[in-house]
Image (cartoon, rainbow, N blue to C red; front, top):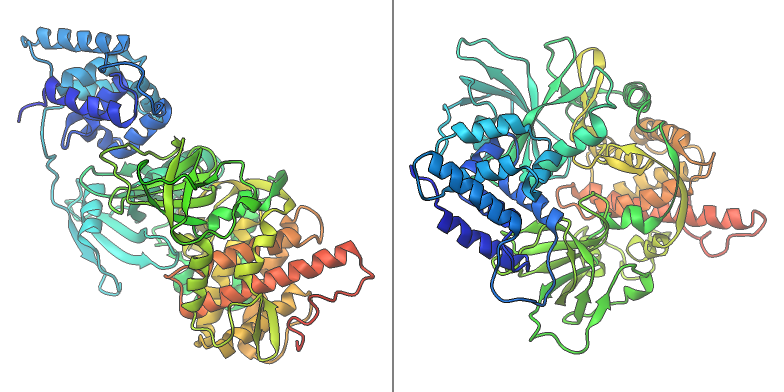
Length: 640
């Protein structure tokens, strides 16, 4: 097959320059054009290093930044470095007896020059330049890479099915093996990614060590690989899950895959807690979590803390639905009456927006792009870190006209309000099928009353918390905790790992304990059952002994008590639980919106959020004046 010619590449490069509002032709535009060639050399080679072309394009765009809205000169002139690259490419073509430059010449020239923006980005992404240049020089043009077909077997005892996209990724990941056997799909979690326990089998029928494979959206998978390198690789204990090989991110798919290997000294296959804890007694589960997770991983994570004073919104606003969803409008459609939001945001700016109101968003960061849905998600924050505040979603984006990339700071985007956070939260509560009034400031059920969290949470956002900061897992639920040989604890899925509020992990785990362990034992999701669970939770929040009304709850709540004892050791100030109840209120409110959670789980999360706010209010009033009678909130849950 023939190579793509210089003429076609330059057309695409100039389009990239125009989308980025640069109006000059730089080496970065040429490299992006090379990556956009379907089945091209550049995309194929980077894919073999575990990097999807769009991911690298985003990194280059972040490095360069977008130009201003006003064009200052005519035409699209070459930069001096671009002329140098073209001269080198021309010399390479002449050495091979050609007068025309094609894609391989340009790619070699860019790597040989080595001082341009694309090579700097590739260096940051960890590529070995010597092997990269060698592969470019020997790689032949092809529109499709041929892979040996890998047969996929599914364990008859495993209740699972694969999509075509998942099968494609798995075959690419295990290229070179005769077949793979999927032992089971690990359950638990609320992300679009899937986790499989896979045994690779060689052509001579010998089985290799079993691994855990994660298949999910490309950006999430590649971000997880980089977070693993940054936060996890050097801090995990010796016997645990390790990321094996580079990610598999085919250009032809929106999915990518990671392999987790287990350094355990045993062939025993791992299981996640979700799949087996139904057979565990609460005391065993609580003890195991302390000894095999908190004590083992805490040495380099939760016990390695530094003081952290933060405004609540900085750590927790990103958990909630977008504060606004806008339909983008053109400059001609925009009116003079535009309500502008510009960082730093004051909560007083976040007035009650009305449907159809015109809003201008200035200097927000692009957190996420979705070309299929034609949406971008904006937030207040830096770079592409997980924690961004004040999310705003913008719909009907024309990606052909204007490039948008994660980490981009948008000067201005104007749109009409299509939906608000308040509306999304109210819709999520309606989906719980409540048999009580949900539009007032408090929830009343059989003479029991708690704050309505969809209104009360806002009072928490501007508060300042005295807490601590450490490396956190970021998604510590039972599905991401594996059990290896000799009951060793293993952690997987580091897509949200970062430096953050220490208590966040234990809030996340408590939510999982309620929804994945306690509620399934009750085998009921009626409001009467959920309110009874809320009564027990209120007793624990209040520091009182458990009720003795339900034997199952009396027993299972032992694991919640153990989790709270772990939390107590992580509090920044002894017995100052305010930081925990603020985190719990907002994390539960987030979980209430998860459509993948059971109805009973979402109902409990709604009440748990209100109870956490109630407890926080009591503790705040008590700390202000221990002798003062609490008048505004003592009627809540009064019959307990």
